Length: 612
Image 1 (cartoon, rainbow, N blue to C red):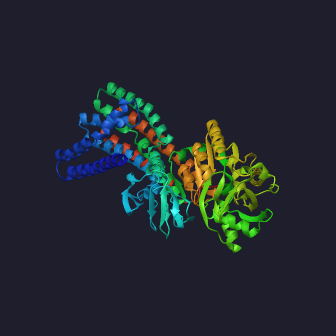
Image 2 (image 1 turned 90 degrees about the vertical axis):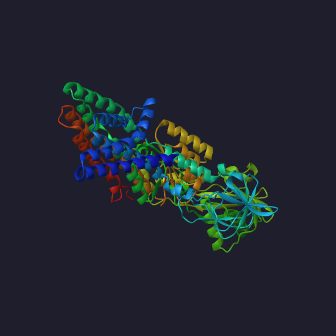
Image 3 (image 1 turned 45 degrees about the vertical axis):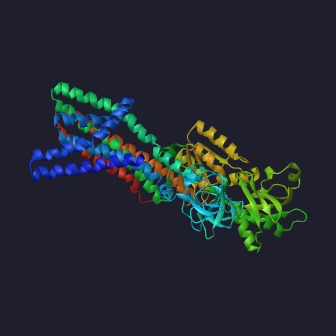
């Protein structure tokens, strides 16, 4: 549906441009009477636009494009075909640009969504048969061949291998898979074939969620554009009043048309979409993917910023510092239990455990029935034992009494068959720019409240908060508690949430603006309004400045263009400006407004003024 709409607007704009060009050639090379037929064809081609405007008027939506519709009709009645054709060109071109601006935001996800499988390989008693995705059912067994895209969410029942699940950023990040491992639709299989059992229907799987995100991004209408429509409402009434006054005072209906032609608010129709496209393009060159164009105008107005801890204020690459074992458990046993499960996890601590085990020559054991729940940890069968890796707060009181005293940093607890086995401790360091970024927010972005919100232990969260200079700290928060806190803050005022983890996705959606650091959790990236690929707080500062630049230049172009149009309207009402010269003058105004809007994407230097 959306594709047909964009095609319609684009084709009308192209046809209008060709029609005007044919008119100019015919007027000087042939005869003016024949030349006008090209303009009449352009006006007829603009009829679908008039129907769209009538639908808006029927819904009591008097926007900035209503003047354009009135101008087209009036020019046809008065025989001012050139003026009308130019308005058709501007109206269709502006709408096409706006639609392109919203679709451009989700181009990265859109390109990947085209690769969604149309069929799956179902394993039956008679062998493997190909079925269309609509026929796939829960509990079906499907074979995912090497290098194929996983068609649905499911769990591995046979085979071992790896899958690349980083389908947002395109960065290679291989996740080991074994019987019991969760697999996600859209993940790219590695070298080995695997058999999976379907746990979600295709419409409920991960790819379906991505398509939903894309459709929402296309449907969202930036508030700045809605402001333009509201401005267009009173501007339309004012222009009509001046046009009627000019007609009554001068007694010439052509004055009415002349006023409307130059009053057509093309700076509103063109400048703001062009500015949005420019901001999206500029962000892309700086390693930032804009998924929701509306966030560009909102981010600079956020007065509360909430940080997640791991991977946001820190590098998200903690190192294993201590292995504290229970009686009868050696360091090697503890590492083997940990690495056997953590090789199937995407948590930042998993990489640290894998690195430590590799350095000490500890190999993983056979595992089965692996499960991972946000905020609760990992569970699986390792060599006949039930092994759990979780946090201190999740263990039973009788186990908690056996744990070593809390210390600064991160930790995880290993349980074997329900009994305490070991505690692993880690240290993560703040990003080099974390402290300077936190202290940069108030003087440069008027941020009044900064919060550190984490699910980690209070000791480690308070330790980091002291290092980076954050006083408002919430620790030990579950995903549900994070969501409630962010919702409460967003209800008070515009709130920016910065996160990098699977636990952050619900909170990120609840914030006014959610920004995710790339290379980690695909779920979080889906929930985010923007994704920073290079994982730098300086890039977040750059994003805030891009939003500020877009809003400032867009308003400059729109308001400046409308001011010049107002001057032209008064001249036309006084009889000093005929319709066609008025249309030409309007085009000059349009060009100036669009050229100014193009400055959004023309920033050569970094906009961030963050030092340190």
